[in-house]
Length: 450
Image (cartoon, rainbow, N blue to C red; front, top):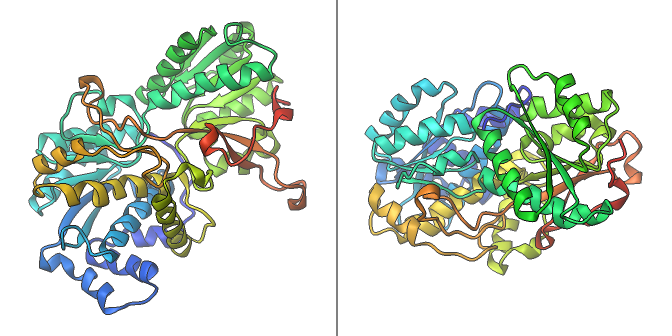
């Protein structure tokens, strides 16, 4: 997923990203175990004693570094927790982390990982990068294990060694349309069949895949597609977009955008005094803390369709998984300083835990073919992974390797508690589906107040 972010703020964490193999394992082992025990030192030096080498490829420098770094920390914590529990079939996991921001170098990086003994490549955060890295891994005969990107095309190419644990764009777009028809229509005094929905989308592969799914979902719900308005990601013409938006007379707007243009769209709406019943951001723009921090009151009432973040209703988890989530959250706080895992951190941890805990221990061998066969054999019910997902990979050619039990949710930006003060940053509350909801929809914010 191409997710543009502000310049990195987690400086201490980003410094940790440059470590590879044993040094990184030792750093996180201290956080997991609480001390530099003999066991932790043994784990850190395991690369010399037959450790399982796992390649990790992420854009850890440049604009995506902050969010990709959170995903990397989740992956590292999963590896270290499995190692603390005895490893995989008696072998410790050693992560070989590579910083890749230039997709033209993907083939060379994957080739190096293969030469150094990796059978699996985990990555790559951004959809445009993931498409290239996954192709390079498949061409090299390695398993590619997606930990973050959501573009449908990743698992739509029929590549038998490519797997994605998290939700794809089709799930996010479909959720937006279903939420609009089932939850928002009654609040707006509409039926599903009378609800008018306008879709606004950037024209790249990622946003288009989300918008296509939303459009199909609108049709499936019997709602009215008032308009679909596509815009150039590199040079959006907001006055023209908003003129068409107003002319379409929507009750609900579904936006498929990236971070910077998604924020810019909302600012343009406010500046032009455009009012709608509800705005659902079906991609990253409305799903990061920066949206609430930077827009303040203008964020309040906006919905976001994305993967779960920390703080959803723990009742969505199986009992053993809830204990695992609590363990992860405690270690995350030690490593990162934040009160709960971020969306990227939880996605990275859940994807890596599925690989390290549920697939590799059940593989007949650690070659790519055996690992892929073990992945295809896994069938875990919803709530089995720490982000609320189950695990069952599709065997349908057009979705080959996509986890069909991946979790996705709707958040709403709501006012901060009165005790926090008038200038406090709005809070995001998971409101749907019911099993994930940490709070109800604030009905006073539908229609959107501004």
